[in-house]
Image 1 (cartoon, rainbow, N blue to C red):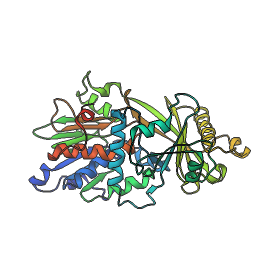
Image 2: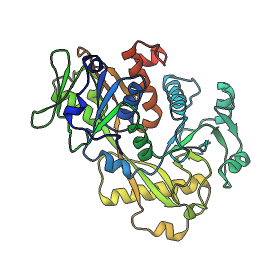
Image 3: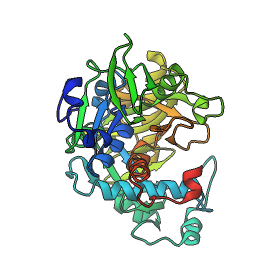
Amino acid sequence: MSPRAIAGVGSALSGGSQAALRHLVVVGGGLAGLHVAQALALRGWRVTVLEASFDQARLQAGHLAAALTPVVSRQDDQYARLSRAGSLRAQARWAQMPEAIVTHCGALQLQRVSGRIVDLKSLAEGLGFSEQFMRFVDAPQASELAGLPLARGGLYFPTALRVQPRALLAKLALTEGITCLSAQVARVERVERGLGEWRLFDPTGRVLLEAPQVVLAAGLATQHLLEASGLLTTSSRLTSMYGLRGELTYVDQDCLAGGPRCIVSGDGYVLPAVQGQCVVGGSYLNEAGSQEAVALARHENLERGAQLLNITLLTSARAQSLLTGWGGQRAVVPDRFPVVGPVSGSAGLWVATGYASRGLTWASLVGDLIAARLTNEPLPLENDIIAR
């Protein structure tokens, strides 16, 4: 992350009483935290972002590229509607992002040939969405879109995006009104309600910051912070949150016939090349995993990617003992919905976590949802989904 300013605690708290009333602290400098910060900063708030994880910037530095693609279902259920709303909100919010950071490439979701098979053509016809959002394409049409001879067709999402997370975070941190404190300066251990403000403490018991509004957006650490602060109730959905490691493989585009022109997904996915490398995903490991487990997961990604693109892998690609890649920890709740909103009985304290592998999808929408609640704007989402 490349913050606009690295400030001391004193300067972060400077300003008059009116400014203090519109001061918000975000714990967590990843996709969730910086999108909340941006949403409030764009509304004139002064936002301080504390990087909760010492290794966050380093980890994000290795995340070469990711995809923003909607989810659809025959019933257009709450998860699909939330995904669509999140994707559309992200596209609007990132409209001015440089094409090098947010690339408009489109995405194909290919018809499956094993596992839970859904007739994607009848699904598209039944939903009746605009072709600007989604349409069914046959194998020749899919091949033309991808620039490779694909074996089957599927759903095509013209507005899907390939995103470079590291550059996106750096750009978000430059938003006027946001001040970022690096992990070395500010590691939050617990929060406590003071006289009208929340106090954030470091591991030594020193008060880092005070603010009337605090958003905990630190992934799995959000659960720890609430528990350490005596604020995690047994009825909270956060009690069931767990970590799941997602493993990506970086493959030289020449090994994949140059790589696809658009995102191609099905059983796994392949992204258009960035810096000569295609990102192929995604295997999941319940734990950090040994070197052998990581190597196996990355080779499984490679095989799935080749099957999706309908190409034969070069012997040299299969022979590599340990492919390069990236592993990121996901904060997951069993129902796969994010955990967002005010902490019950703790006015001014909010959470934004549990995004699983959909951080790009949820982050902009959640930022605007929290900002709308704080500024009494109309909420940008249906009430039944907000309640869920």
